[in-house]
Image (cartoon, rainbow, N blue to C red):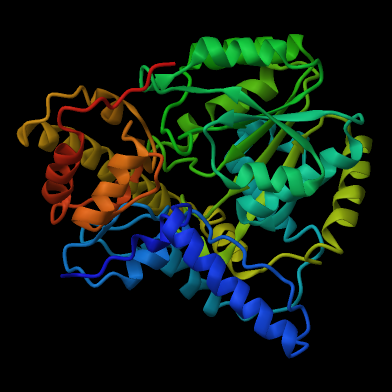
Length: 441
């Protein structure tokens, strides 16, 4: 019998909760008796995703499959360092001017120019931006800026569902959060009407958090026409657009296409404030380098200077200045025409492999005998597929088949390959057969 610790995933069950509480209480009592400093510090809950990764690592079942991790894997299930990234590092090693000195508080300005042009295109010259600790740091810096300079009581409206860290980041930054409808479990598709209604009903001048492309976790994006209507509505409501862009180029394979929503807003949004949290973790494969930017579109040069001064004041006590290696890689690639061309080809190859796995998963489910309509999986985009499976189905996949995923039914399509896709499809068919993968609303 293989040991696959569902314990990490089911901390909320009564038995485990009792056991953990008893252990924690005993430890706390012992520490208090010994007068240990901080003996009253309670045990914090495990991270929803990192806890699953820990459980996967501890599992000794040879069949185990990890479709939880939000990182690209190649066709053999291994991490992939882009050859253009390797080439950039070699070029940096040969450059005698490269060093390990501190960057400025705002980061490497040459990197920032390239990064913002990558996102905003021709509109980048009217942006003020800072280098951040990837997308998480960008959201945190942006949230803190809004907490300090948006009118008191301004709420940030966050889509349901979203990347789980959005809620914590914005709350920690000092903003009041509120949900807006985004995805329909009844149709396994975008709840466009609900989204528009909630944005319309939000108080004028609210902050609306938007995923620029490849929405996480659903993989479901508005169409171009829907984006245009969202922009018009937000402009009329005098809302603030806060884009989170983690997958530009990785979503469709075309970085220009994936930048449509952001660029449409800055070109057609009038005086609507537009902000961007940008990450290079997924699309450049620089997960551990913590490379990103936070920027604001602002056509007033004097206002850009004032904004930059305040962003520096936010960053200085937070992390002082950003790491250098990842941004130097991105700068080197985007400053070299040949490396840029190579990078775009490699990024497209990642997107194409994921699209292939989406299609193959649906086909293999049908071949396994599933009668469900899985077309939403093939219609979605980006790293993740939002399957519609319930928490109970996800638990059964882990308990019975050692397939590790988040309990909302999200799977990382990047974790699938020719060696495991049939096994995963048959397992999904087994746990969903005769049961609904939609939820009445």
